[in-house]
Length: 257
Image (cartoon, rainbow, N blue to C red):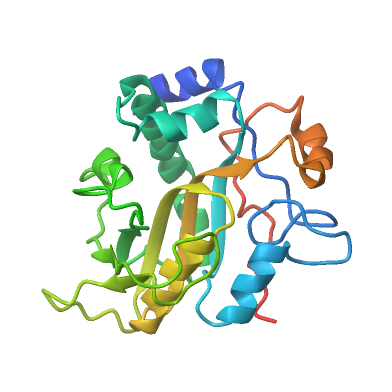
């Protein structure tokens, strides 16, 4: 007989108050196979994800896993900004940590499948490129809750700081030396807008020898004031967030062609 759920309180809280969360849509006509944003009906990928793939066919993440859409103006989008703002919101931090905790508890096997069947060897957070001092707020939020050693990714200050893929944007801190050859990495970020930073970080990890990257983001930014998003937002408008579902369920990994 299974024991009591150690996350029952968090599960109940999100079930009651997570009305603003929305599961990513399955990949398919009009939905990007990588990020679950809007794509042309005859295209696998949206334009940014297509650009990332063309720039680094072998360097992009093997799986991209947005936990929820973050619709501009709603509570989840607010939390993703407020947890790291000048005046940090502890309520926002608590909600995001709860969501991450449940995702890792409920979908660890999904992540393992995306990495070849085993837990990740390492974890990493996409560094801030805005000159924020100290550890990334997401790294601080997670603390020591993940049982994997962290890869010290750093922003180089070189390359393009905009929303385009750049292979020179990040580096793996060389001291102390870390042998990443053949390893798998769980790559984390709070928000996916174009995905350029996350895919640039994935490229850096693979250039250092990493074999597979699973990229998990708390929120896939959605813009209700941009027409291509409207069909997707209409589809998810009245759906409830399901904790037992994730973007890896029944969806093939992004193709390498």
